[in-house]
Length: 154
Image (cartoon, rainbow, N blue to C red; front, side, top):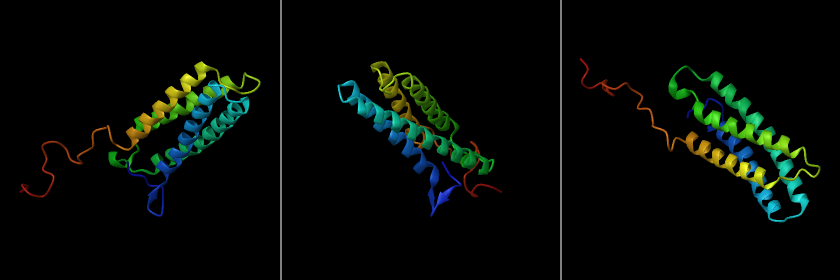
């Protein structure tokens, strides 16, 4: 995926994307410890980590939208829409989890919420893998049946 937004030649989007997902992974780890019997403070820390991750995810979503608007109409310049949709779905799942946790006085997660968090982080991993291009087919840059170089053309 080619990005128009960069700092010193490095694309900004992957850097911004990994920060919220790293925070979400830390929140899930803290919630697993909380489910195993850690003090309630660990649950509150996980809650605050999810809030920070959602704020970072909102910034990242804005950057992705700006990047998509700045891209030309060529397919190679546009970000992969499926990867963006998967990332956005993870943020929506964790926003719902945050709302569920607001109902408890100490902001801790029940075991069912922890399972949903684990599924959300797994989807985030698939989205990150998808956006690197590891599992999707690469575009050849030319149409089938047309020569790739100037050879063979009259």
